[in-house]
Length: 340
Image 1 (tube, rainbow, N blue to C red):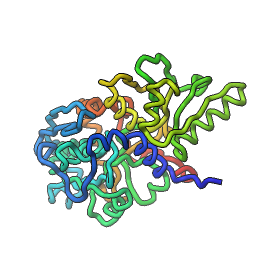
Image 2: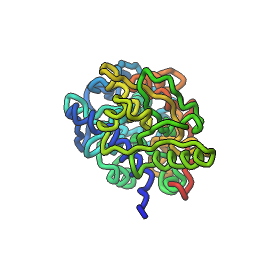
Image 3: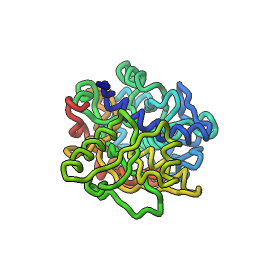
């Protein structure tokens, strides 16, 4: 019996599989250490979203003045230091469109560090982005070397024992279809009947898809589930109409849609579904050490960005508008311990 990987490992594996080919084609890699690159926000009110993104984002210049009422809520040590140390766990290879090395081979670009820079600007702080492996990211938070992580961390009840959260994006899976295919998921697994769907083995999305297949078979219907060795093979099967759909992490599909837009077989997002399953909308959140006093001011800052429209502009620039939240919450319900 195959041992199932933990959800974060499964997610990253699916995300990496769906983006690896495009990343390699772009020469994308990642570096460690500080990456608060010039031109992407340096404690002033100008932030460049989607800088050096290799076409994955529409570069957008945003003006984000500091808000003293938000800044006043910060822990004194952070406020007096004048810097917000932002953790990103994108080593070794990055995961576009969320976090990866830009075309200048030095700027850590992506929706995650860009949101961190917007938050820092609204708080009147200089963003210092530190890139590390996923495991070392949490070591950095635990040791106090990182103030807050913006790195696709799913809120779970288990993680709440050590960390506090400010939610900022839905944690979704999605279906990728050819642009000329009118099919849409519509939130109903029964719409998959008769379809051939590619999915990565051992991932959370495979688990959900196989559960839907079981339900359909009980109703006298079926899904044909296909597996391919890499993202390029999956796309070739989709463009050649050997499969109808690919099912994977919403961000990786958002990225791939931008990469196929000018090709012979452009694709589109044909519907999303919570990565936490039917009973809970999974949420991605800024992550800080428990009792650090950072989650509340960060959540209120994100809500300020939502109200002023900069949050929507950020997601639109990175083709992630379908993962928007209406409100940032402090420590929202997370995946239960049995599923986290």
